Image (cartoon, rainbow, N blue to C red; front, side, top):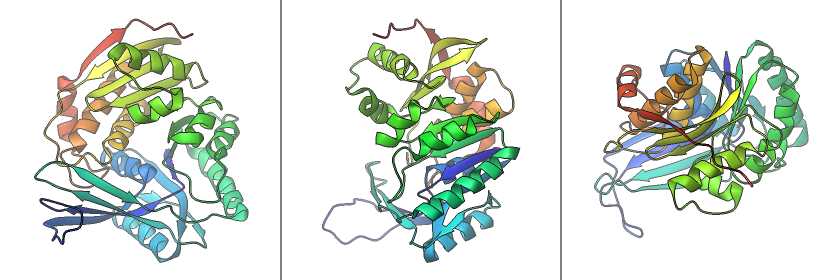
Length: 318
């Protein structure tokens, strides 16, 4: 079983608005409303890929009820802690004429210490039957930035693989808790190491630098693939995976689809190279879908043949 944790779950509204301009009145040509948040998106892709997954986190108010109902309608197993405050709604506006995408994400609910403690107990219970636990997305109000780090340390007493996909202070503290995998995108990685990357060499150096902070493996996603430091026969190996970007319909959630694909292959016991290829293929395939976390598994498997994978000489970390 794979558990995805979404502490700041949402209802995601995706709107397709041609020739979108601020300050103007528009009409949508397509719209979709789904349960969302990074962990929920990952769960959706894992479900599409046929993997056993359960989504958990916080859900509050009428919006929280809608989140749970939408997941149930999609036959995604879920077990959320109900909280008093209202869960958030996020809105994404895609202009199909330019490909530009504008996202407006609400702050989300305030969560009390007793609600956090209730979730903590639920997660430890669920983890008894899990192989992988993924912590993904932002933290809601009232939650200390070290919560992911604390939960990772608690789970280290078990045999589960811990995965972190977040940003800012929660990511900075989580990497020092030595999770098994962290998966930032380029902007999140730049913020973590404190500088921008101007070249492929700097990106590869950053992956090694992040790994030196604590996590066993690091996967940095890029628009055309990823840089990854993974363990092969117990030794760290730096990999670069590339795929020719396709003309996207929407890019929202492509990183979530990448991570879901990687973890699905890993759950099946595939070799690291296979996991990276499949992750990149899933991320690329998802950009042809309107709505985060959606994927066509057969097409993703076909696209694995388009992924170029190479070994990179490790950069020296100072």
